[in-house]
Amino acid sequence: MKDGTMTSSSKREQLEDWVQRWLKANQDAEKAGDWKPLADFYTDDATYGWNIGPKEDVMCVNKEEIRDVALGMEMEGLENWVYEYQKTLIDEKQNEIVGFWKQIANKSDGTRDEIYGIGGSWFRLNDDLLIEWQRDFFDFGHVQKAFMKLIESGDLTPTMQ
Image (cartoon, rainbow, N blue to C red; front, side, top):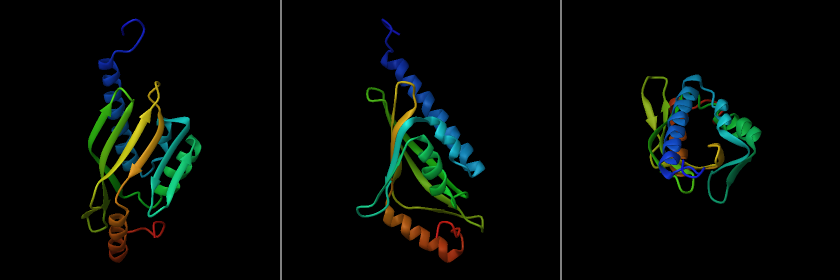
């Protein structure tokens, strides 16, 4: 700290530590098949949104809605899925992080299906390192195609159909 303000290197280190905690919490959520505990990473008035097709967006507003909808209802039926982060980029000046991930379904025959294309999450954190907003992005066309294949193989849960 210099004159009571955080240096950019210590801010960078804090954001790097946050990324490691987030990745670990995601792995724990995948193992448990329950993403709701991730809500502890958000501010009370956070927003979390994503696009699900042409001119159709989803936006969850506040921690409770994020817990119940984004991390609850929207993840039901994806208990056998993992979201393996491939790369994270940190902007310590803006307190923003972008993580690129793969969506992978673990199938009943022991194989895995990966949704083709780029998926990711863009976060802005407040000074307490809580998520103020998150936007997810993925190729919806590839998601649809993968879901159709999983329906055909019997590996997409009825909840997701």
